[in-house]
Amino acid sequence: MPLRVIRKSPRRWWLYVGLLAAPSLCALNWAEPLVIAPLFHHLQPLQNKALASKIVVEAARGGIAGSRVYEVNMSEDTKTMNAYVTGFGRSKRIVLWDTTLKSLNEDELLFILGHEMGHYVLRHAVKHIAFASALILVLLYVVHVLGEHLVAKCQARLGFNSLSDIAALPLLLLLVLMVALAGLPIPMVFSRHLEHEADRFGLELTRNNHAAAMSFVKIQEYSLGISRPGIITKLWLFTHPTVAERIEFCNTYWPWVTGQPSHYAAYIKP
Image (cartoon, rainbow, N blue to C red; front, side, top):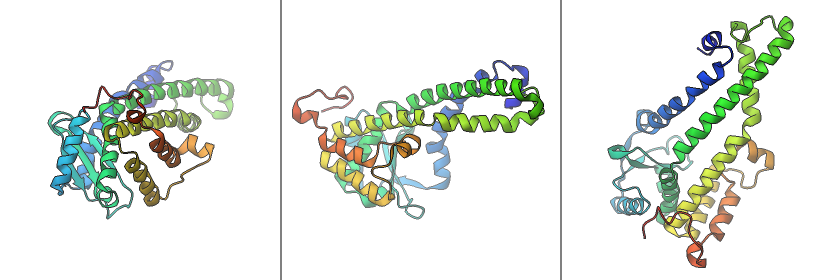
């Protein structure tokens, strides 16, 4: 398909292909938790009804009223922990992996859910899709410029004189990989920013710094991750702030104690 688009519009193919990114990402973001995940893992209502009630109350305080709470058995496949909030209207749901339920106590669990609620309330999925779509457009434009330059300078060696030639496909793939790798720190920085916002939201919702910090300690123990990676590793590989950074933030952020204004007071009910 990209080669066909290049043949029809050799100067603007990158724009037309890039514009497909937003609807594609939207469809994937909707389908993954609501359609794809249930195909592989059975979701059932949370068995701990007392905990489910507390989660529903916290969700309502955080601006997510009318949500249902589910658990999914993931312990057969992994020891890592996860939870997420997804859907809208009657499909709105809070999902917890059983590994999370088994590994965290109630206060730690409520903070992790507060973090996930932060992603939902602050519309991080929409922001991520918008950012990724714009970045893909830029990436494809850079590939277009580099590809045209290489074809113009080296067509005798390459054996083709247009990026629409099927022989140019390996060159296009190589350029996409190179540009994507070089620009990878950009989406990683944006992702870490969103995760930090969600951490802040979770703290302001629960106001339980110790439970928040301990949840990250346990996540670190189970995931066997690197708490303080080198700068190169962090820039290219970390979608979240490092565990050490998150624990330090949990241990020092309490505007409700110091009298400073909260960032998300408008979203959280007393």
